[in-house]
Image 1 (spheres, rainbow, N blue to C red):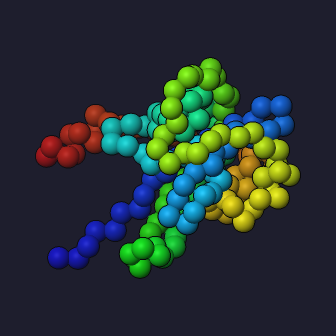
Image 2: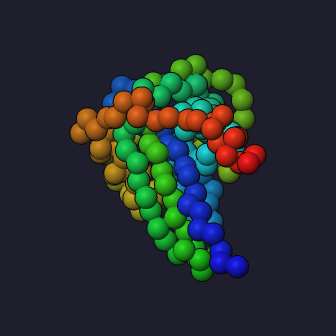
Length: 162
């Protein structure tokens, strides 16, 4: 039986305040890397719910998405398994809310606020080239309304149960 190809869906948050961006430093299989608050879409959640959850888990900040900055597809060969991996990344911008006293997600070392220039200066530590690309597209004014995104959970349940 042929293997079914399934891309991994991820979300990321661009959060700017006073000219600085909220980023995380995290442990990865490639070492310590810098990224936007980001992570995988979980079952039964919308893309917006996922980015709100991931931001809270990784930064301890509430997040309100206001627009979609971009949708990105990345392919690479996994160094661990040798298999081709495809990611579909949905990057949102929005406003930070309250910061909570809570532990950060496992593997997150710390949060930090960096300017665009500070972020560009540490490019070799980025989790992927999308980290700076998304910030640059945000700064260029790239925005799509959230109304472009639709979640049809009830339709999905009907299809799956049949």
